[in-house]
Picture 1 (cartoon, rainbow, N blue to C red):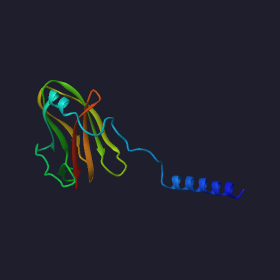
Picture 2: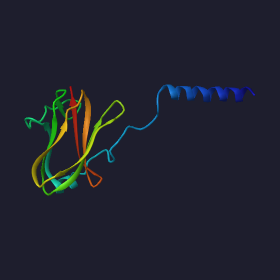
Picture 3: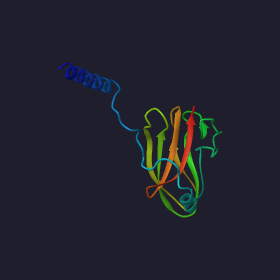
Picture 4: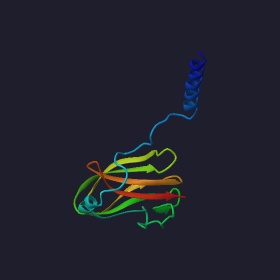
Length: 144
């Protein structure tokens, strides 16, 4: 009887702790994560960079990884495409729950072009570029 009562108390304690911490769920994701397929990227693009939308300049490298940009600076992806290709662009937070900030599809024309991402509040992020569901590029960045 005593063991059963102890088990009930333990279950109630675990349930209370779980509800106090909020929902237990994995971070949001746009699909593929991890290492990009460099070979596939090379078939589709000759280059791709994250830049300041107004100037086309890349941000300085940050020790946490990726380029650094000032808050509220409109960003863009600058690319050189080997052929017309439809790509999915997904911006995810890299900490704080991993929320998806932007999820859009664009068509990259053959040659040079850019795709506007907008501006972001201070945090660390990664832009994931997917083509036909395959991750072809990760562009990590930080906004200060």
